[in-house]
Image 1 (cartoon, rainbow, N blue to C red):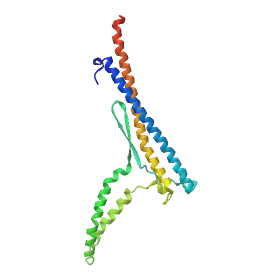
Image 2 (cartoon, one colour):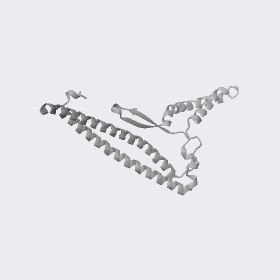
Image 3 (cartoon, rainbow, N blue to C red):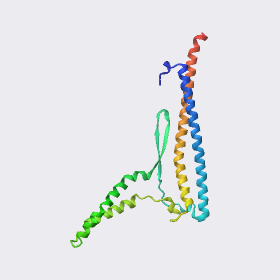
Image 4 (spheres, helix red, strand yellow):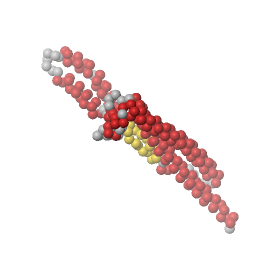
Length: 211
């Protein structure tokens, strides 16, 4: 961006037009996202009502919440220029993708070790190849996260699963809405700053005429 001394009213007016057009685009997108979010919330609560009707009010309530609750997602924030903030919903399970690949590779190696065990049945050397099986089972139990749907039973209705997916999508949508709101505020501040800059330039140009 050029300095204030090198910019004239024409350049500032053009930037003002671009800024206000960008603001309208962001506001339109924000309105669309809000309508989608409201629709998701309504659909989620309707699915919960269907679940309570199928399973009973006492079977789908806060009484079934786990005594140890851990978040399955987190919100990351990134600050951009001019103070704009972006919000991103990150799944906690996404960090465990690499260990899963390692486990698969280890499981594939069990086949040859089993053959070694069968060949050495009479030698009494079966302790060493058995250890990898225990090492595989322990990380799987530690890394596995409990699905909140299991709080309400093993065989839950499809409506409860649909409610979970709907609210999960709503969480991701709230991050987009928050990012758009931050962009709206940043664009408004930019527009006000350009208006003030235009007024100052206009005031300087009118000073000689008044004298």
